[in-house]
Image 1 (spheres, rainbow over the protein chains, first blue to last red):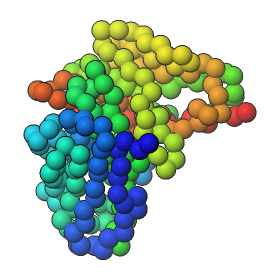
Image 2: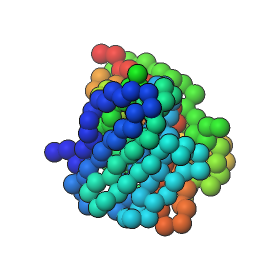
Image 3: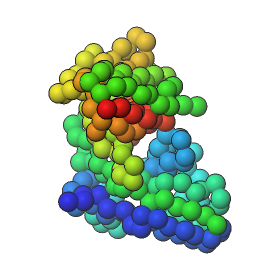
Length: 114
Length: 114
């Protein structure tokens, strides 16, 4: 049974047109993460929530925003996608401290910008 | 600047032999290390971890070794099986405030030949 679900699996958006990627979890985990992975690159953390506490990485562009309306759902909003934002976006969750529990990843959403 | 480095993009081994995947890190604050395995079209899945207070952790065919002085860790798979063919990501974390985050390497694609 899928525990971290990302929708859609594939998203095509136009240059400059806002797009939202969604992630839901059935694990009731406290922490949710969004990673960006470009081709042949390491997954790069964009931001994470610990419960409702939002933690933005210093180098995450302002173009990227996130919402977590409840424990189960987390959204990634790209306000004005550029060609350089084409990537795989991975959502992950963890119960708490990573040394006490593992992080579970969704299958990812592959974003194409045309 | 890559804080976690996997310098071998790919590795090919024969079934039944040992696979050794290497990972180097630069941030001395990292104190917890993990390996994730990723099949095509799936999200990464947790494989094994090690705390900086240990130098070895074993789980079945998988063993992770940590050399803190060299800032180096390795994943040994013995014996290797064709089903182990996947991309392996090394990740590291450092405790920061009330939560942690993973920093990933670029991954090593392992191919186990029958």
